[in-house]
Length: 443
Ligand code: FAD
Picture 1 (cartoon, helix red, strand yellow):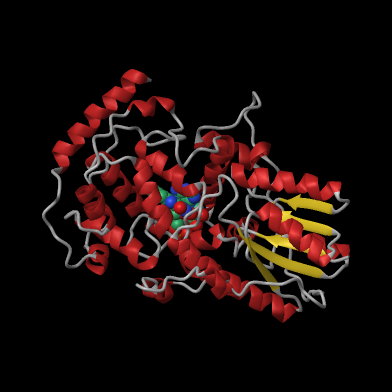
Picture 2 (tube, helix red, strand yellow):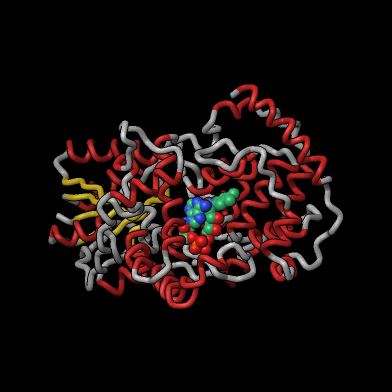
């Protein structure tokens, strides 16, 4: 009986423990991806994420075909769909790499037990995080809420395993189960087609991801520490969508980067990714609820939709903010420093609830990620784990002077943006601090 490998956030062939397990079982392999937008609690993908997914699935299918298999695409509630494919194919085993959000874990747990009840072999593996969230615990057995001790604890654990090689060839089934065509899912925008900037910027898929990693390690990693904060420098890895979609496993990135001298800072950024997922695992409502409940007392004023709109479209009159929001709209990506500045501006100068910013990023980022996005929004808001202190209000003008001193980034993304700010920075900062006093009183 064939083995099903259920691909999810791991659209690759190298370092894929579930695929490896299927190979070891020595039976024909069915590779499957399920587009699930219906199961309870599952957050539908944003527009930019759908674009990426479409192309990454095409690339994965091509790679599988090269090796002798192919990708079966199915749509619907995952529990039902997996059972259907098992029944259609007579599979005797199902393998997957783990997911860490609550709704996803619930689906996987239910499937594991119902399939095992039917006598199938079902196994799950660690493929998307260096450390399973429940394995990193404090002395008293609880989870971490501060990054530095969390990362120290991770580093004290046995080192991440070596990545697994990709299979040389695959034994596909003679008659694969029915598959949707990628176009059926309408993941790409039609009218208007806003994806031109994404096409110009990215090539989704594992082969391009590996090339990007190689380039970064050879050219940029040595200077990463010094240049990572300058948005015009192009000094960061741009691996975030690759890690989001699992075109590269963190084990691969880790193994390759540790070999380069001076990589500690970069490795600790991977640590922030681990920490965000650790936080989500222990606080599943990270995208909708303040991690620190005293922030529920924050008196968000009534929303002025024109201000939200100006922020979304890079029309705030603050050059660095507008440049960042335009980079995001055009490319589906924004430099980390500018993400912090634009988020701070939304929350602390426009006094708009961080959740609305999180939603916009969710829809527009190609790396929008169940943990990283919400985690970082809460970090900027001050409501999250190991967050920036609430009274730290980034001054976007000073940030521009410091990190984009010659104006290269602003000139690239917002040369013609308005220059009359829609709000007064000093006044709104004062209003934000007064609002945060309410949080302090509630705390
Ligand atoms: P590099 O500097 O090369 O870092 C390497 C990798 O480390 C990244 O690819 C990423 O996986 C991880 N990483 C780096 N910084 C962080 C961080 N602060 N938190 C968690 N992981 C990190 N990152 C996402 O992957 N998805 C998101 O949806 C996301 N939303 C964000 C929202 C806000 C408001 C902010 C301030 C940050 C957000 N980040 C998010 C974190 C960070 O901005 C991006 O990971 C980074 O800019 C990606 O570029 P890079 O791959 O070149 O990063």
